[in-house]
Image (tube, rainbow, N blue to C red; front, side):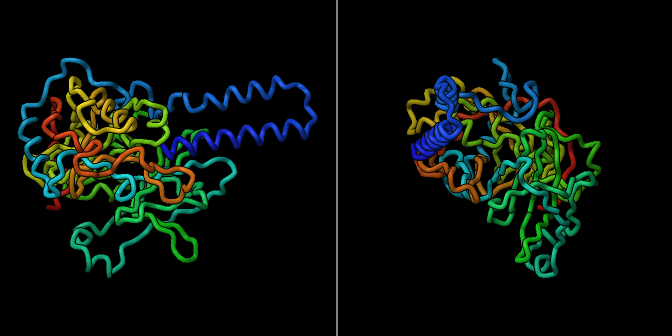
Length: 368
């Protein structure tokens, strides 16, 4: 409710400012004001423009009568074993998630340097010892229009996305930071089109079996874009999510993944292949759970489009847009990230299923 009020207040401010400008121009034709007021008052009702092409994997609903995978019951039992003892899926809104910042022509370009592991980092974290060669993508455009307010996720993954809707470009960055001199750097980074498929080609990123996907510049363990499947505040406020949703878990399959993933960092034998699609029972009565209006929007998307396993995590989590440098936008009380018996977390995992996979590919990161 708080976020919706902020949005309405912003529209009112826009209107007042416009009227002021009209009066300064001594414009007597009130038709302009009426038309403008009509437009801004209906902005909130406009559908959210989803990322990627209309017929992309991400924007395609699950077909009726799609079969469950033979391993579905097995992997659902794995997810139910989550050590955090949560009932269902938590939603990350303020930690280990993806902040997205909008750029435009007025924002100057900032050079994002290649960041390298320090000796201290390698000595402290065993995973780094086995992955010492992180790199930005070869074709990464290092000149990025980073707004002054931009702040990466403050947790170790330190993800951040910059988008320029007019130029149709997105920049993904992983382990990105700004030092005391204002110099930006990242371990991995890649840029791509917002109107493409939302899937990277493995042919474009040559990676050897056993390596980390971050060695070739991609920022998510499955090799999928950070924007793919991310729940955005504006689309929830619009009342409908029209794409698949991204989730992560601790039981991704070791050295096994499926389309649309092009890699994996899974650590569980015969676990969840990264790239696998899960669906919330479309016949499930959502009114029987404690859900806000916004949470119902998310649950309906899980029924219609499903969710995709995209990364390893310490629990069963769904990714929602993070807000760290944008004070005017917040999730506030729209969704409960991880309250027991409330929100999406109140829907037991037994109501999900893993959809049938065409095939799986047997390679990936070898870290266990």
